[in-house]
Image (spheres, rainbow, N blue to C red):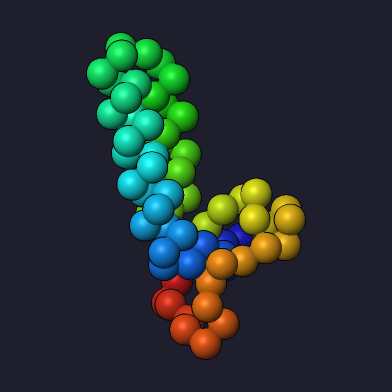
Amino acid sequence: MILKKNVGYMDSIIRVILGTLIVALGLYFDSYWGFIGLIPVISGAISFCPVYRVLRMSTMDPNLEREN
């Protein structure tokens, strides 16, 4: 199955930054909750969000198509 990208450029940057912040806070406070930060980091890095897919949403610019 090919995953069609549904996360736009700015959305993916925000996801990676916030996810990294959550992971860093988890490491700082020595908590396993920091692993939750990996979800937005990974979805931002691969530009695909399964929740967007279920809701049939997309933040991709229709005029600017990135390669898969």
